[in-house]
Structure formats: structure tokens, C-alpha cells
Amino acid sequence: MEKNKNTIKPDYIFEVSWEICNKVGGIHTVLSTKSKVLSENCKELILIGPDLWRDSKEHPEFIEDTNLFTDWHRKADSEGIRIRTGRWNIPRQPKVLLVDFSDYISEKDAILYKFWEEYKLYSLAGQWDYIEPALFGYACGKAIESFVNFNLSVHDRVIAHFHEWMTGTGVLYLKKEMPQIGTAFTTHSTVVGRSIAGNRLPLYKNLRTYNGDLLARDLNISSKQSLEKISAHNADVFTTVSEITAKECAQLLQKEVDVVTPNGFENDFVPSKEEYKEKRKIASERFIKTAETLTENKYKKEPLIIATSGRYEFSNKGYDLFIDALGKLNQDAKLKEEVLAFILVPGNNYGPVRALCNRLNGIDDELQIENNILTNNLHDADFDPIIQRIRENNLLNRPEDKVKVIFSPTYLNGDDGIYNLKYYDLLPGLDLTAFVSYYEPWGYTPLESIAFGIPTITTDLAGFGKWMESVLDKKDGCVRVIERNEDNSKQVTEEIVK
Image 1: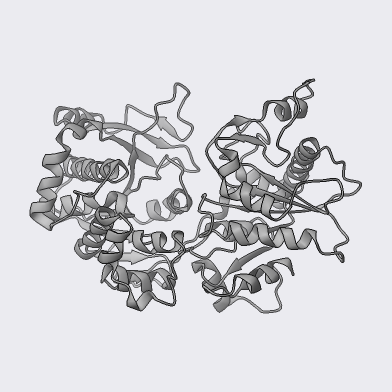
Image 2: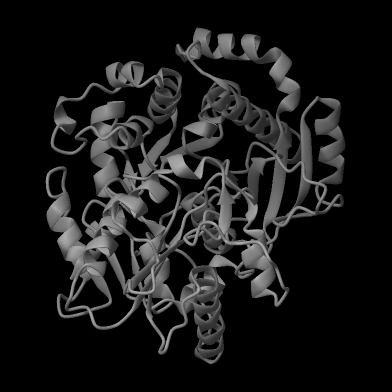
């Protein structure tokens, strides 16, 4: 992007998100990798996330540093603002505040009533998954207010950037208490849009007919919609990540975005050419050994290894059609080579399958592996949508099946008990990825895939896929963008098979 020589850079930037030091989805990647650029464009970058870690083990993403902002820290503590200071355990280790909002739980009715008085924020329908983030945003607003009052002067230029509806009360708090701070609010997907798609209602062809507030009431998400909409209208700058989601915002939030900011990332976590070969060898061997142990099937030659991954949104992420395509491929008599498919989607698991774990580690185990699809034990596995769809497609991992499918319902943080490699260390072991989303405001997984040299399949309903259509050489085989709409699931499945 060409820089305007008249652009005034801020002195301080506060970046606020539920996903700072707390990986949930793609926003974690957005923030962790853009911190380099932000820090180069201001005097001080301070990231703010929720203090949620209650495990006895050391926090894997947060390095506590009690020497940061010590005088202000004492002042904040005297004001009842509970924070921990430190650094995010990522490249360049940016400064982080983790905010503990639990003290505000006892005051929640008074806090939310004040937002109703000032903004008509409707919180009555909000359950705990609304109240907790609403209190977090409020606590972040108070922390920023305290920091600015204690450390800065009226001459310092300050921006506070809030991500997603979960931080929206921070926007509203600062507008009332510290209007001199510039606020930016980014929605990475609209609450109502995601819910429409997740409930299998036709989002795109009926978008212009939808009333966001009425639909939110029907979908029981009125409080989240209220917070997202009011935040969008009250922030100084409102942005989203793709033209697709910008249309949702205009219709469902009744607010045009000021800027569309496509996602990207610093590629300093992509291995060098020298490292790549070794990482690919280790990861592909790990995939194959896991599959052979689980299915009791030995490969005579290396199979084609493919995968999909992401948050567990069964239809939004296209897992249904990915599995259907595997089923069709398995029935294709013309298929000569063997295909090994992995579904790397965190689910409600309770640890690795013990017998599989032991055998992978060379430990004799007389226990039988009861489910030759799962690497990790899954609560209510018989009712799990991915497992059900795999069985409906008769993908049983029999010796005669050319397509084997493995479901790993766990976060790949390097300590899953099966692969014991992080996602980015496993990615080079793949030959192809497929992310055939129906609802995907941007889509980091296909972008990460090609950054790691793995060709990928995506759709034109993903922000990334739509963007790729505008820049991709049609003869280039690195990315295949499949046309997708509400009525062409069969054609999409056939395209994936091809």
C-alpha cells in the first residue's frame, strides 16, 4: 500500500482481543504476526488480552515480566484494575497486559445497566458467553484509561483497536470516558451472519432481505448483535477483513465499513528452504506412522497426504463436503494411488487414545483400538457430526479402501500425545489441503498452506478465495478456487474430487 506522506502516526497503540495469548482461531494469527509492523509505526505497542490461564503448568504464550510499567501497575492495582504485565511468547515478544475481569462479575448488573442508559446496549438476553466478554471489554477500557492518565500527556496520540464484538464494551467505555483516544473496531465476521450460515439458512442469496436485529432475536443472539452493532456505529473507524463481510456489515449492522483490511501475516515462521526438507520428512513420516498404527495398514509406497483444518464449524467450514468428496473418491474405480486424509479440527476430546499413543512410542499395549478413525478420545463420539458423516460415506479404513481418513480432534500445540508437533511443523508434511468453506470472512488456513508450499483448494465464499480470484494466474496450480453457493453442494463435491 502506498504511504501518504501526510499520514500522522500514533504514539501509542493498544490492540485488544480475546485471542491475545489465547488461541481460538485466525484472529490469533492476525494479531501475533502483525505486531512487527505495528511496533515499527508507533512509539509503543501494547497488546491486551484476557487473563484466563488457570492451569498449574506455565502459560505457553505469556512470559510474565513484573518490571514492566511497575509504577503504573501499582496505581492500577490501587484502582481495583487487576492486570499482569509481560510479553507474548512469539517472535519479537511484544508487550502484553493480561486483564483479569473476574472482580467485575459481582458488579455486572450495574455495569451493564450503565451501558443500557448510555447506549441502549441490550444485555438482558445475554448468557455467560456474552457477559464474560462484555466484562472483559469493560475491564480493558478501564485499564487503557488508567494507563493513559498515569503515563501520557495531552500531546500523545493514542489509538485503541478492538477486535470482534467480545471487546465492544471497551469501545463504548472509552468513547464516554476518554473521547480523546481514537478507537477502531474490527469485525472479523458478523455475529448474525455466522449464525445464519451455521443454522443452514441461505445467507448470500437472501442477504438483502434480512433484518439483523429481528434475526438475532430468532437465533437467540440479540445481546451479541446489539453489542456488535452499537460498537460499529460508535467507533471512530469501523473495518472488516473482506468485501464479502463488508456486505454483511452494511445489511446486518446497518453500517458501512470505513476500510476493508485484508488479512496477511509476517512469514518469519515459514521454514527456510534448508529447514523445509527436513521438516517435510519428519511430518510426513509422523502422519504415515500414525495412520498405519491406527488402521493396521502398511503403505507399500507413500500415499497422497491431504488435510483440512480449522475451528469446529461443521457446515460453515465445509467439512461436510470435504468428507463427501473423500467418500466419492474412495468409490472411484479409476483411482490408482492411495489417499490418506486428515481432519485436524479441535473437538471435545479427553486425551489421546492410550493404545495408539503407547504403540507409537514402542510400548506394548494389549488394549484394542476400538475406533480406527480417531487419534484422540472424543466425548459422545457416536453423535459427533464429523464421525457421523465419515460413517455415512462408508469410510471405514478397511484394507481395501484406497482412501483412509483420520480425525484428530485436538489442538496441535506440540503436546497432543500423538503427533507431538505444532500445526506449522505438521503442515509441510502434506501434499494438498482443502478448505471448502461456505462461511469464511477471510480464511487463514489456505493462505498459510500456500505460504508453506502446499497447494490448496478454497472457495469464492472465502474472503481469501475471492481475493485470490483477482490476482491468480489461471494457469497456476497452487490455488484452486471453487465456485460455491447455497444450491451447488453436489457440484462443489465433484470439483473437490477432481
